[in-house]
Every structure is written in C-alpha cells, then in structure tokens.
Image (cartoon, rainbow, N blue to C red; front, side, top):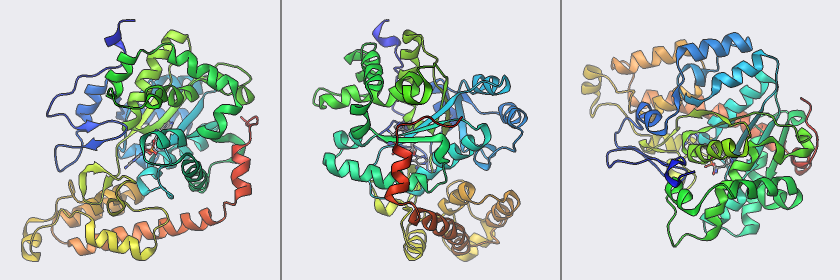
Length: 400
Ligand code: TYM
C-alpha cells in the first residue's frame, strides 16, 4: 500500500483542529461539524438513519441522537443490517485515565454506549489506556494504573450490565492475553512510521511508545483479541466515541482490510464544550474548564456562575430588547446535552432568545439540572466497591 493512502488528511490554516490531543475551533459557535465530516470522510447522521434506528430496534431514538449530538458515523447501516438479520456484533469504547475523576464530557459517549448496550443487547468491551496516559503525560506507571481503577469505578457507576461488559486496563491486561498482543503485532506490521506520522503528527523527538500506541487502541476492534469472550469467532464491532478518536479508527479500518477482518463501524459524538466557550472541548487538563463527576454542588454552582460563557447581552435592558444567543451560550449548550425534556428545552430556548429569560436565570436552570444528575450519579459511584470492580475485570465469557 502506498504510504499516503493510509488515512492521512491534509489540514488547511482555517480548519478547526480536532485530533486525540487537541480540539480548537475557529468560531465562537464551536467546531464546524459539517466541515469535519467532509474532511474526515465520514457520513452525517440524517433523519433517515435515525428513523431506521427506531424501526430496527423498536426503541425511540436517544435524545443525544435526536438532537444531533451524535452527528456522524461510519457504516452504521451495516450494524443495523446485522441486527435486523438477527446477527451479533459487539461494542467497544474506552477512556484514557488522566485524572482521578472523569468529567461531564466523558459521560456523553458512555451514556450513549449504555443505551446502545440496552437496545441491542450485545457484549461491550471497555479499554482503559493507562499506558497511553503514562506515555503522553508526566504520570508514573503506578499512578496511571490507579487512575484506571478509579475511572473504571466511574464508568461502572453509569450502569453497565456486568453480564455483558468486560473492562480492562492495558498495563495489567496485555501481559495476560497473548491473542491481544499477537493482534497488536499484526496491526504494527501493516503501518509504517511514515504513515503513523502522517495520521497522528508524531515527530522525531516523540518517544517510541507513542509510535506503537495506535496499534493498542486498534486491537480491541478485532474480536479475535478476546478469545476468552468470543471463542476466536470473527464478530463485527461498533465503536461509539467523540470524533477526536477517529484518527485511530481510520487507521484501524485501513488495517482491517489488509488483515481480512471486518472494518469497525463508528458512531461519533460532538464535544461537550469547555465552560469558557464552545471553541474548546471540556478537558480534564483544565479543572476550571470542566465539571468533574466528583464535584460538590457548591463547586458546580460556582463554576457555572463564574465561568460558563454567556450568550446574553451586556445590560438587562439590551438583553430584554435583543435576547440571548443560544448558539454560543454554554449553560444552554449543557442543557441541550443533559435536559431530556424536549418541550422544556424548546421553551427555554424561546424565552432566552426573546430576552424574557436572563443569563442568571438560565445559569440557575443549568445548575438545577446538572447538580441532581451528578448527585444521583455520585450515589451509584459510592456503591462501586473494589470487589464489584474486580468482577468487571475478570477474563470470562459474556452472556450474549
Ligand atoms: P479520553 O479519555 O480522552 O475520552 C474518553 C471518551 O470521551 C470522549 N470525550 C468527550 N466526549 C464529549 N465531550 C467531551 N468534551 C469529551 N472529551 C472526551 C472521547 O472521545 C472518548 O470517547 N484514547 C482514548 C481512550 C480509548 C478509547 C477507545 C476511546 C481507548 N480506546 C475506543 C473511544 C473508543 C482517550 O484517551 O479517551
């Protein structure tokens, strides 16, 4: 295969930056997702796909799908075809544990993955890339492993069914599973240094672990990496994730064709924005830009009141006259991710845009929506003991 054929994209100066490490939009309304679909070569999730989703599964579309938060896909129709024909596939997603607690943005792909697991009744594999974080950040191996365990508990508290869910952290698991390592090497044999540089932008001073890491995120997309679950059967895979992870899976899909394995399908979400504005995604590296799942009600209130970028006008008079801008308002954006009631959301939009609702009032609605959501989550998280966690990590057959 010629080097340049493998998943490399050209980037222009006016393009938004979206890769696994950086997200930076050029406009205050955020990332231009339609442009991103064109650049990445994925497909837009349209009304037709959503109706087909509902028809094939017999379930009403999740609000994140209906509202276009999940906006892009690769080969989602093949997954619906399989389900329609009564054939199995599996779900694979992951987390790079870089903080003691996950933040609200990480909830988006995981919440949606839980819904997919419930709707399709299929096995789910969750990879914790503690190796990735030890390689990229100034984090000791021991600390990265500990963060993986903490984040595993964060993930379990979302409500994944133990019978159908296997969770692993790379630093412990890869040494226990020769089939996984063998697939990593198969993948590594298909990708040159030149190609990996082109896809991920690695440079001459990057440590060699980074160069091989993409094979580790790719390997779980092949069912033969998990013989204890799938008995060496070849099963197609669907990966839900935010679109920043797509470079890994563009590479995986190219490699799959060469290994004569099914290409993983993907369903991509947009980003829950940082408190300071829609140009950036919420990210664990900036505590003031993020609401963490272990924040207290007081912290949530303070962060939203102090930092959430407002689309309101400079004075009350001006706001009453011109109305607020929901395209850039972060409190409104958070509501569009977390407030499930469509009618209430539409009413809030109307009232804010007409100037009837002021910024402080909108912030209060966001605080009153997010705080109980996180408190209920924290109660579930407190119930996840080490023992419960160990059961998800056990190498075992899954039910379906
Ligand atoms: P990580 O830990 O950066 O992110 C975990 C998951 O959350 C998504 N995400 C977001 N989604 C919405 N809004 C945000 N602000 C936001 N920030 C992050 C990410 O896209 C991801 O889906 N290398 C990966 C871990 C990984 C993985 C995977 C992810 C391993 N295998 C397979 C997805 C699918 C990482 O560091 O994710």
